[in-house]
Amino acid sequence: MQQKCERHERHGGRGGHGRHEQSNPEGRARHRRERLFDANDIRLLILHLLSGGPAHGYELIKSIEGLAKGEYVPSPGIIYPNLTLMEEMGLIVAGEGQSGKKAFVLTDEGKTSLAAQTQELEAVTGRLATLGVLGDNRRLPEVQRAIHNFKMALNTKLGSAGLSQETLYKIVDTLDQAAKDIERS
Picture (cartoon, one colour):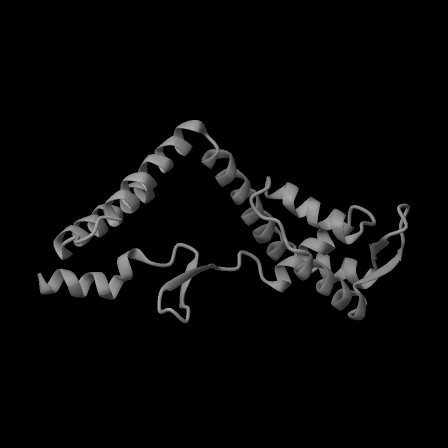
C-alpha cells in the first residue's frame, strides 16, 4: 500500500492539465488556469489582425474570440496595455476610426515585425484553431452528457463522508486510466 501512496504523491494524480494549485488562507487548494497565450502571442495576433485593416480594441478582442470559436476571449486588460506598448514600440499608430473610437493601423515597422514572425504566428493561430475544435467537440450533446454524468458520479462519491484511503486510490487510478485511454484513442 505504501508504494501506491508514494506513486500518487509523486505524480500528483496526473496533475497539470492547464491548472495550477495555490493555497488560500483557509488552506484549501484553489485552481488557477494556466495562461493560454503570453503577451508576445497577443501582440503577434494584434499585428496579424491589423494586417487586414484598421481596428479598435474591442474589434480585436472579438476577432480573437472568433478565431477561437468563443473558447478564448482576451480581456481588455490584456489587449489595451499591449496596444499602448505596441504604439510606443512603433509597431502601430492610432487614429480616429469611423465610430469615433481609436483605430489602430500597422506601421512599416509593424509589417516587418509580422513578416519576421510567420512561424510563431502559425503556432499561435494553430492553438486558437485547436481551441475552436475543442469547443465544437465539447459542445456535442453526447460529450456534454458524458461529462455531466462523470462529474455527478465523482462529486457524489467524493462528497461521501468517511471514504477509505483505498477507495480514494481506486478513484485516482480510475481517473488516471481514463485519461490514458482518452490520450491513446
